[in-house]
Length: 220
Image 1 (cartoon, rainbow, N blue to C red):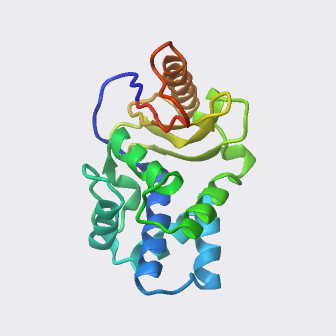
Image 2: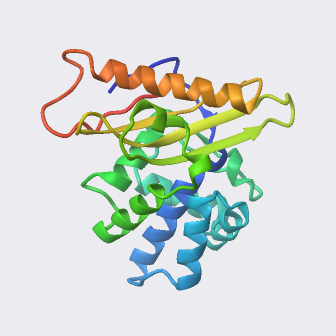
Image 3: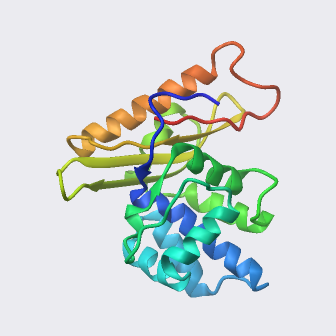
């Protein structure tokens, strides 16, 4: 694992939508059922175009803070705390927890079944073109990504995040970049992309990788 910058807890903004989708899939697995057409449409809108209304509806369906926190624990997130009052974008997390979530989506073993992981990964690979910035800057190959961005009401400064899977000359790399205190969204996007490139460069250094598929990642 390569790390760039200092560890810490950050608000998720819309990156929490990956966790919401995974939580819904876990709930459906528990009930031994498939997602309904409406649920599939809501997850698709939430991930592909970052639809906030869809996220709010699914958050409520899952039982809000308590339900999402429980699902996050099953998915391996140990430092993530969902926000109260339906403010899902204010969920607090760490880059390590976001990497754990990405591993639950893209790697085995996972609490998510193979079909669920394949479908969720496919959605992250078809995010709207205007939202395909962030960790995707670290590779020219196809990538799966979910970004989050929001200005903080108290300061006017931006939280800008990006998580996803990229290809690194064949092997895959899971990358989570979380940031806060950005003077604008544009500056934040540039910083996130610089951080993603930095961790991937570090993973390319001699001795940094491991034989076979590389499921490492980074944080900033």
